[in-house]
Image 1: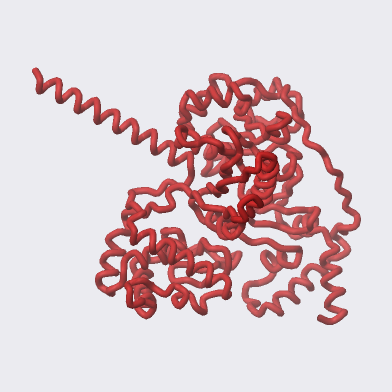
Image 2 (image 1 turned 90 degrees about the vertical axis):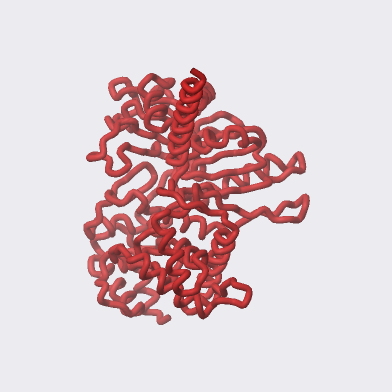
Length: 485
C-alpha cells in the first residue's frame, strides 16, 4: 500500500465515528455508555474503539466500513472502487467532524440507586404471572433473594436517569456480584404494554446507565460446575421454570443480548472459584434464541472452550437453543414428495433448509460468513429480504444433493458447499449440515405447527399444554363417573 493511501486511511480513522454518523444523517442516540442507531437497537457504536457492531446482522467495522455500508452507492461493486469512494466521502467534510484525539473518556463506576426500587407489588406480580406465565414459586424465590424488584412510580423516583414514564412499575433485575452481593448494573423490563409505542415487543426494555462491563443478571444454584448463557433475564428464569428438577450446580447468566465478552468473564470466574477444590466446569452451554441472530452468535463461539488443567481435557461450548430440533409441519409433505420424486433423502433436503435459513421462507442466510446457498445467502446491507418458494428451493437442493450422494446413503456436504464461500466457511457449514442430517435420520426432530423460538415462549407453551392435559383428565374423570351411574 502506498504512503499516500496510508495517510488517507489514517486521516479517516482520526475522525470520530459517532460524530461522522450524525453529521451524515444517521440518528445516533446515547444510551448509557453506548451509542445506538435510534431505529436499530442492535446497532451499537463503541466510541472508545471507534467501531460499530450491528449485532442482528452479524457485521461490524470502522468508519470506512460504516461509510461503505450506508453512504456508497450499491452500483459500485468493485471492492477497491468502493473503498476509494468511501475514503473520498469521509474526507470531503473532514473539517466538520470531531477528531478522535479530542475525545476524553472518563471511566464511571456504576451507581446503584436502590431508593428507586421496591419489592414486587401486585402490578409487578401480575405482569410476571399473566404476561410471562411465571409460577408463584419462581416469583417468590426471586422476590426473597432480591433477584426481582420493581421500579417505583415516576413521582417517587429520585434518580433523574430513570425518571421516564416507560419505566413505571418496571421489573428490575439487578446484576449482583455473587461474592459481595454488590449491584453492578440492572436490566429493566417494562410492564406497560403498548404495541404502537414499543413495536412488536410491546414493552420497553432498558439497561441502566454505566453498568459494569462484561457482567449481567445471574443466578447461581449450587456450585458453578455448569454454565448456561441466555439473551435476557426473562429467558433465564423461563429456563429455570422449565427445568426446575434438573437445574443443579448451575450458574445461569444473562448477556442482555449476544455478548461473547460476558461469556468469557463468567467462564473465568467459574474456573477461578472451582480451582482451589481441583474442580473445573463440566459444561458451558449457549442457550440463545432459536433465530437468525442466535444462530450467528453460536457460529461465532462454537469452537471456543477451556482446557481442564486437572485432566488435560477441553470443555467445549455446547448449543442449547430452544426447540432447535423442531420442524414446521407445513414443510413435511414438501420434503417427502421432493425426496421421493428426486430419489434423495428428505432429511438431507431438510438439513440444507435448516442450516441456511433456519426453516423459514426468506432468502437471508443464518450462518456467519458469506455462504451463497440454495435457500439463502448473505444479503448486502441495504438489500431487502425476499420470500422464497420453499418447494422450488427444495427441488434445487435435491438436484445438487444427487451428485453428492455416497454409496452408504449419506451425503458429501463438503462437495455440496464447495465454491459457495470462503474455505473455512464451507467447512463449517458442511459440518453443520452433516450434524442436522444425522440428527434427522435418527429421528431427533419432531414436526410441529409452530416452533417456539425463545425460552419464555416455550414456557408459555408448556403451561398451555399442562392446562390441556388437565382439562382432558377432568373430562375423562367426568365420563367415567357418568358410566358408573
